[in-house]
Image (cartoon, rainbow, N blue to C red; front, side, top):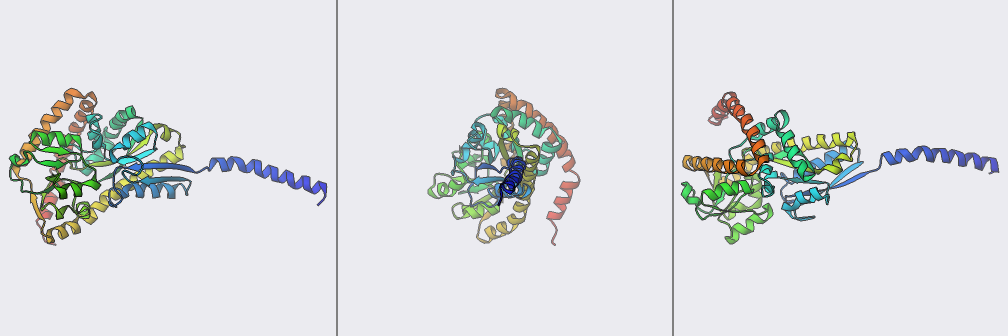
Length: 360
């Protein structure tokens, strides 16, 4: 090859390299980590983060990948908010009420006793002030939130003995999902315990717990609670429609392009819808299997429901007095809920009541 040819080809190579460099830079892969509060064994609630991660990868053509880490893998299950706030991880998938101890307002981003059902929660978050108010609050923790699933109304938990009246809660050591319900149950005489999902079975088996609640038939059967506590009560009046959330470190989110921000939001919506649909699809079969295995499925009595409602209202009034963030968000939530209850009393409730009595 002569000197002129070498120069010619070198020049072309240089032009190609110069032109390609910005494109390569623009397509640089993004790698994030997500810390979950849930064990891998629960393909429903933990699985929501997997659904999200796969959607992000697919939507970005593989240029944006988020690895999912089960509770305890990178940090304790209840340490994920600290992890996101400090930037140790870019994201978490968790239930906001776990962090009630930091500020009571956290619970309002998920569920409070006698609060919204799943559809009402979506309405408040998407077309009320819910998401706006919660993200204003989460901003104080360097986070932004996105819906990451819902379980629907949960069961009331597993008990070693029957619960015939509010007095039966006295002295009972019960695993509960958050500090708010713990304060309510304390007013009923129970001794609340906060234990991650993966540790509940052992505690029930050893007698460290007298009762425990988790989610509903599918998850509860997987965790084996029916083997160590025979009485299964409903409804979980403290979790009418608990939202599971994705928390994203604000700085990490702000660093994303508009396209990748849109991908995050779209992927959270995919996971959010999928989780509730999965629970609704899987719970009926699991409940039938639990009943066939001699589980005693019982409703809380009217006396228990009334006493629980009264105790809840007392705790809410106390929170109004000690947390301005709670007071502001709670007032908006209850105002929105009043209209939701009015509407659901008509078509929805009448239809459900009728259909529950039919044989098809």
